[in-house]
Image (cartoon, rainbow, N blue to C red; front, top):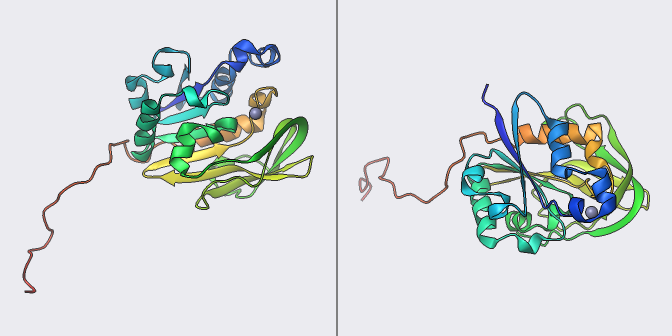
Amino acid sequence: MQKIKVTIWNEFRHEKNDLPVKAIYPAGMHRAIADGIAAEDLEIRLASLDEPEQGLPDALLASTDVLFWWGHRFHAEVADALVEKIQRRVLGGMGLVALHSSHMSKIFRALMGTSCTLICRVAGERERLWTVDPSHPIAAGIGRCIELEREEMYGERFDIPDDGHLIFNSWFEGGEVFRSGVAFQRGLGRIFYFAPGHEEYPTYFHADILRVLGNAARWAAPVLPPQELRCEKVPPREQLGRAR
Ligand code: ZN
């Protein structure tokens, strides 16, 4: 069986520097996600910002089928040249799963072409993610909704393009709503934005959240072998000039 090569990239600084976060995710959120979605058909590699080449040397990127991305405070540190490489790879067919505060990452904004801004509040409130499209592969095995005891509120308006396919729509205790699970295609690549995952809450241990992430890894896997898209000069398919 050909395994799907998943690379989970994380800033991995909150978990080293903020004690409450470290207490929840001592080995990092990327490790919790990797452990939580581990399966026979997935080959999972971890990467983080402070590693050489910001965790994504060319060889790793070139062998990645689906890239998970968790970024927050240090989006600006990610090198523009790396972002451009990731963007080319997504357009050529690699999948991207953008998590939580990665809505403001350079790579997600580059692929969306909009500001990706939203409203937010950290108040430990209840969130319900309502399944809007139960027929989508990313929602497989999820019931009517996912209940989270405590999450950060992300609310509308979320400035994303209107070509996204809505899979989950969230309600928050404080009254706001948010498009919390949205699928896109850019070039040949599939992109899924999934909002839950604030670093101060144990969201990446929640069974339904992990199920969604595992589903997303499989859905976003390239349909064709990833390729470099370029313009081509081609000969005519028919003989030219006959109508003159
Ligand atoms: Zn957050």
